[in-house]
Image 1 (cartoon, helix red, strand yellow):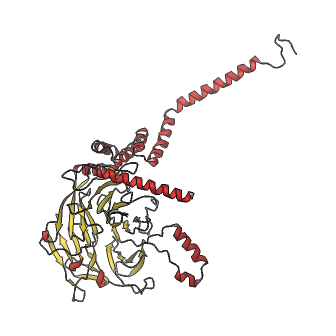
Image 2 (cartoon, rainbow, N blue to C red; image 1 turned 135 degrees about the horizontal axis):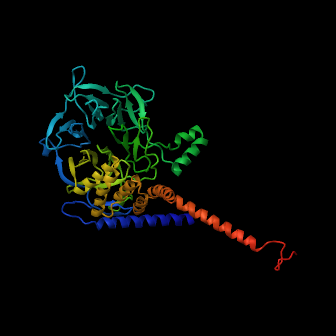
Image 3 (spheres, helix red, strand yellow; image 1 turned 60 degrees about the vertical axis):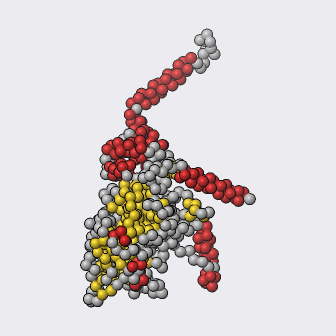
Length: 507
């Protein structure tokens, strides 16, 4: 009974929090420039009105670019020359689009194989252009292959199902997404495996799997492990096995070489976003309690939906941009995973998307000035442009990350003038003061941001700084106190000499 009561209290608390958050959305003032509610999260984890970092400026379709309408487009990629490549899956083609997203420059619907024969695509789902090799990498899903091509459409290499004991030969080879690192290694996400991305070296040799997700240590998983350990072989065959969820999209930080993966599974909060180094270790593993996307379940039409991150893009500034299929929102974080901006919604207006149908995300600019979101159901790309507020935030963040802590203070202060609820500014100011050796001020802003980690770190330095500055005075005070105590004890002894009576005679 007590257990049920606790569960009921937790449920009620969650309901009250969600209702309060939703009410705060309703209170967000919407101007003509903001076709959706603009919000962020304060230090209490509450959704509060916020200044817009981006505004949806226009929506682009295939007919707008003088081609036929896009049919179930599934991926979008930008190359080193700021040209865009769109996987128009239902039309079995790849489109090359200019940097301003105004014109189609080339249509790839036929490719030349190394033997001179021609080949076509069959529902391509992934496209990537390597800044190192300049080659085009295509996940040709229903042809059960990946193509590596030159810009003229000639095929350099074809990757098919590996003939390896490591790869389950009963599985078909269904490439979904693809990318390449600076060493020429190719990573392919497959529709039907949870082992991680299939990895091939630059020569096309299958190496194995990379970056598999972990199984969340839930009570059910722990119980399954226990019963499987004592069950007979016959019983094991009928027991449900615990398997990791597959990640379904990724991007690479071309500067650092880290691969970021996203998992849209709604069954677990484990490994929703990972930052994986070349050895396959998740550098975000310490963030097990971190919530990507909205901090609560979203309510639509009488149902609750959890955030489902279906794509991830690493900006040129190191920002982490996540696309949520549930709400049609983009969540932008800085490289330390501090939330910067939220944009987008579900709806028919500019900046609104079809629920569950956003499929790809791309950014452009040194400070992520422009964001592009692909809606496969509408067959459109929505362009978000950075606002003045967004540019100030990115300027402050860039200065801080570049080590210009004092220079970052002014733009962070300007951010707070424009939006007093903006938690990232408090964190930025606290960190800037810390690196300038102004630990008391750092503690003040860390407290306003409710960041115990930053506050404790600043307090330790402030304590050491205070002790060092007052060491002489503390030493003098200690010496004076010691002398006073010693003098008091000495005088006390003289007043009470043993063996003498009040007249001074021996007893």
